[in-house]
Image 1 (cartoon, rainbow, N blue to C red):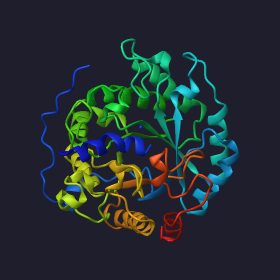
Image 2 (cartoon, rainbow, N blue to C red):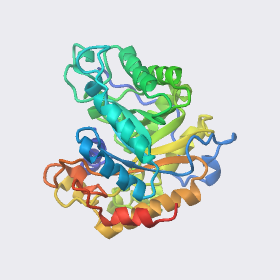
Image 3 (cartoon, rainbow, N blue to C red):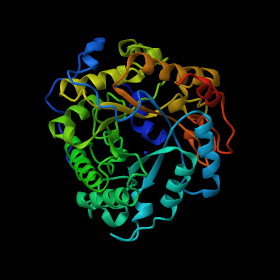
Image 4 (cartoon, rainbow, N blue to C red):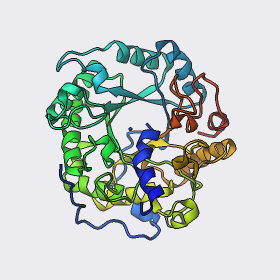
Length: 387
């Protein structure tokens, strides 16, 4: 991102959706600033169908209020969606000391999802503080001092829920320093973390789908952020292709309608960068194909449009409720018409957490279901759309 507003967006999108020495950008070329032809998105090998194309998901927050699990999962099911994404914070499960697990809440969530007939995508990150590097303690989200500690945790979760948790997301937005211990993003270090988690999950549950971290769409190159295209090239240079089944991306729509080509998002009204377009996903897909990874699907792990009228860093690209509903439906429709078979799970945001308020939680403005369970127009539009 080339201006201050865009820099703020790169750093804050992870908070909205969800949360050393700088590594030099990889030398490999990035896709040129021209429209991506459909042939560049397919690759030469058949696409492995780990998900339906597309599969329909929604981000949920079921950790703290078991009495709301049935309500929220019923909202997912009644919308006609088959997947719920849920965070399993490492520190909430293995927070006291290594090897001491508290399975109370994850057991409840897995049981509730099974009862509702909803598949789970579980996000794994948020280190316990006992695992912190000694020189950088108490960060909200950062890799542990010993990556194998994270691998052991991934394996323990996969072993306990073998055959019951269908998919795992390994970390979130590591191309932003705020998700990497406030240190410069490092695609090689993230790949090492991905490797230990992937290896452990596959050893415990070979059929589980492992998805790489959703990358934040950004063009910023600084100690606080790395462009997602550069980060993905860096992951491939570090050997990441061997350690995920499906590539994870985040795809907020910002101000642009979902069909807008990335080159048109260069206009100031849309933000001035190609990454402000929902279809920036196509440019990331082209990198996969260029690296011989076209046989894998893409999962969109966070997608939506905000209604925010309170926070200036978001309000510049806010839409109204009817536009939010229209754009979400059109995003799913565009993917179904143009991105098959390589598009997999598409995860909208959010069924809101129980304690969000419009004044204190900007995520409230993205949600399609409010904390009290009241649907917004986008919920009904997604419920009614053809799937």
